[in-house]
Amino acid sequence: MRHKIVLYNPRAVFWTIPLGLIAVGSALDPEKYEVKIVDARLEADPLAAVLREIPDALCLGVGVLTGDPIRDALRVSEASRAARPDLPVVWGGWHPSLFPEQCLDAPYVDAAVSGQGEETFADIVDRYALGRDLSGVRGVTWRDASGQIVANPPRPTRDVNSTL
Image 1: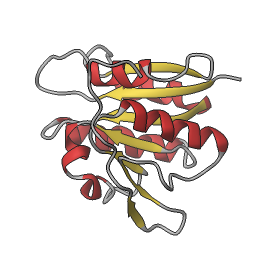
Image 2 (image 1 turned 90 degrees about the vertical axis):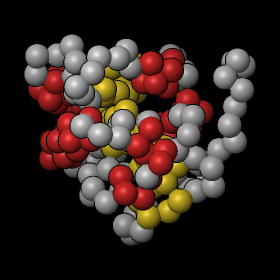
Image 3 (image 1 turned 135 degrees about the vertical axis):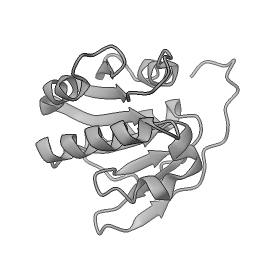
């Protein structure tokens, strides 16, 4: 059975291709995961598009830049949690890399990936698929079952010219 992973690129005042989400999604095993990217810059109603995709999703990943995109990332994350209280919400990108604990101040964000996200996010979704927590996953700050914030050790930086 393949698990659906929904990735969200928040609204912003500028136009960019969501290369980070493409890289993260491409690093997942296509035999195990079906990746859906919802780009708020292309959707007339991005929140509705996310809510259509999450009923059968394993998790929601959100790429977050510091600045205006945070507002939309918070809105979509909160609405997703309201629609699917059991759905893990994982933030990655520049803002979570710089301020992972701050991201977890939002009660509907479960984990924040710091640094290069391809290997870390792959480890996270593998854990979620197995029903396990994120203990020992390098490069992630997360909230455990008791609500405590846990900052795992960083993941070493990988040469971007190598393959996974």
